Amino acid sequence: MTFDVRTLWLMGACCGTGFGILVLIVRRAYPAYLGRVLLLWGAANICLGASYLARFERAWAGEFVFNVVSQTLVAACLSIELLAVRVLKRQQVVAPWLMLPPALMFVGSCWFTFAYRNISIQHVIFNFINMTLLILMAGSLLKAEEGRRPFADVVTAIAYSVLALSTSAVIVDYFRSSGFTPEYNFNSSRSIFNNVAGIVTEGIVFPLFLMMVSERLNRTLEVQAMRDALTGLFNRRAFDEIAFREISGASRNRQAISVIMLDIDHFKQVNDEFGHAAGDAVLCAAAATLRRSLRDEDFLCRWGGDEFCALLPRARGDQAESAVRRILMAIEELQFAVDGKIIPIQLSAGIMTDEGEGLDFGFLVRLADDAMYRAKKTGRNRFAVSLADHPDPAPTSQV
Image 1 (cartoon, rainbow, N blue to C red):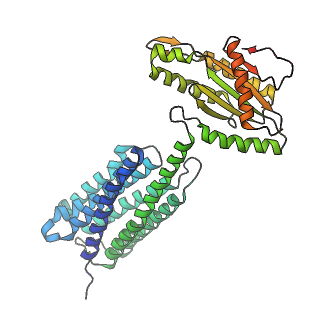
Image 2: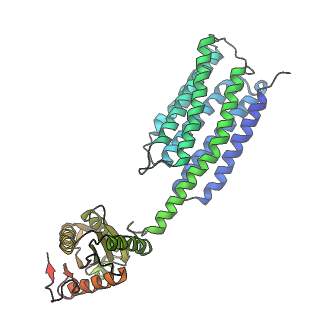
């Protein structure tokens, strides 16, 4: 009894098409960026299923569909998968280059099917193009993303690498046996091995890819839970947790830590005169300038409305004052225009420093806030240091 490879083709058609349709259904539950990735992945799987279906009945399909269309669909599947992987990992995508493998497969298949018939050579080209795409996918998956390599990415890269290795073994076997006959026995052990390896890898990679997408979704939700939607800075909830950790550590190690409260001067006038869209743009510009003016180890939060809070670990009072002077100068130099009109942006700030005493974060914020309002009352566009740091009333400082 001879095993009929068409059984594998039917299995591949059912698996590929089924996986593709399932992905296209579930993508609606994901945000736009991940939905696009799943759209590409679903399209790739449907291409793979269609390629197996095109092979299933040779007498009905004809030589063009059987040899040319089916091979080209496999190359298109792997090219789209590579595109999906690079979009998922936010890597550079050169779309025209990704269309080259299917184009080469189409031309090569046409030539060795009709012009110079040799189906064995056609299969060597087929396997070589597929192996190249598999190696490129494995390489993309193994590249670090935000300084990390997710576990699902590594396992998927290994699966693609194993399939690329098995494909290379098929190519080596072709050359070793010199089996470049004009016709090709699709029920040969070489063909069976090729098809089984492809279907098994497809079954392994499918859940792994969903794991990769879910991991990105979880990270996106974590970021959304910690960040202010407008400015991208930490929100109050996340900032409270950070402050508790940093202040506890500073207290244990007897290190200073400073809190700075900042408020945009006359922000209501910006909203009233130019509209809330301009006000939002001013907030984003101010937030970006504040972030650039602080150290990498400092934390910045949008406290609410037009108010910001900065936490400076291991910063004494004089260091916090230097940071605020730097911020005020950067804000004054900020050229922000709406409809050709420059909107002056200024800040008032208040500073409170804990010299390793482990003071409550709420208490530090309240004293820094009081200092900030003293700065506003005495002319704005300046900063004041909390009176708790200076028992004798200190003069309000201005840049």
